Length: 130
Image (cartoon, rainbow, N blue to C red; front, side, top):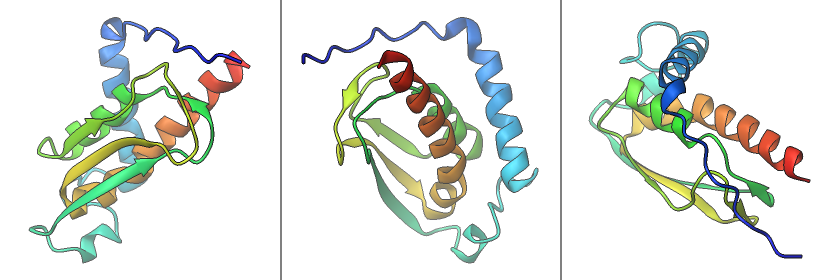
């Protein structure tokens, strides 16, 4: 079976919706004080820097990079995201999807919300393609 990548959608008309959805998810997850982070992240000194590598656990179609990007843009625009895949691309188990560099507190605070968006949207894209 040959796997093909699905063309990415133009999300420009939905930028406000993405921004608002991410804001609501962050408010639900950590409250209004983004700088403090969640309760566990508050244990990490603000100056600590970290790197993170996000990998897939299953074969899937990736979707949701705009939501992931927006999570870290709202939390800490200094976080660097380097995508190794594109929306619409099939990935295999243990493939690196993206890497993050920045404040350890920001990475810990945003990872849960970012991964929730990525998993939900990628799962939907994958199931709709099967």
